[in-house]
Image (cartoon, rainbow, N blue to C red; front, side, top):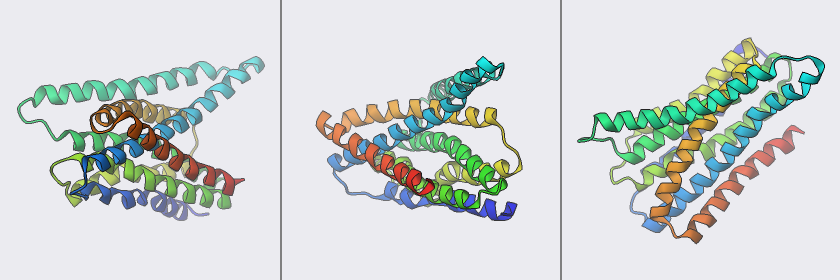
Length: 260
């Protein structure tokens, strides 16, 4: 497969994130429905957090086992893993505090801020997905690369919904240009990762971007829970979390099945 063809597949996989974004422009829905949408989106993000951490930890654990045979890569990988999570999490904490500290009298709408944070975290995650597509295409595993594109495209639909869900609780409707920017932040890294992954591979870069995404999503999930507690009863929150988690898990199972 040529570099251009692989890049096109990466662009397709990333573009599906726009399918879920129009949900953010839906208005006239009840507070209960807003709460359910938020809970479902939180469930999707919880699964993605678990999935990201699992994939980031796998090379670290493999390197740990290889230490018995003289491999010295473990220390570097575990430091990158820890630093990535720390930077992803604390970076958003301090950035958000600095932003609102400077604009106390005219803060940006919280739902839009949260949506952009979600898009940023998912963008880091999708960069690693693009790396996987590019690496598979470069090594001649064309069928597997196509399977990855299909699976990641399905995942990105649910990720678009995760970005848009906080916007449904905002009093002002997000503009199409705002949704376009959010979609590009979340989806374009899939294309970029494919281009990079086709040219070279690096376990360290792979772990770094997954860890950064995990740290960012840790912050975002905490914020989503805070919103959910205001909108939902505990039972409604739990049901929404379950539906969102299983929805994301189902798409992941499909990817695993067709790739087998």
